[in-house]
Length: 205
Image (cartoon, rainbow, N blue to C red; front, side, top):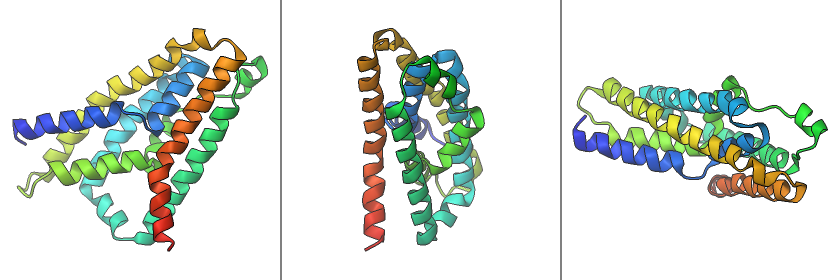
């Protein structure tokens, strides 16, 4: 992989990792509800789970998905249902002692598994593999480099969003402020579903 391509991968990964999406909205919400320390397993699951996904997609899993419209539709539908459920849970959460005892942040495995039904993660993985690999016979090395770049960028992006949520906790002490923030995070999750919902609607025509 040339230096120019490596720089392009870094820019692409940075932009996609730091811009709002399901992972970032959920991390910010978790940081505000549970604090940075308790959100670290969630952040680690995203940080490691997404590069693993990129690597496996680069080895050929993407071709299986793209070859089956029915499988695509099923995965998109599952991702929308899960994101809608998460949005409802976030919007309904509050700061009462009873709620804090009942709610729990995502675990490492849950966050890592979520990448496989995260529409933005699929978009990033397929786009990166399609745009930045060549037919030079060094596919595995190129895919590994893309995954490694994603790993480094994800460390900073996940911690940034989780720390953002944790950092504004003191301004969310009041029920009204916390409810507004939770609703905003829930709406951002719903907004991230719009493109995939349009694709589902188009496929069902």
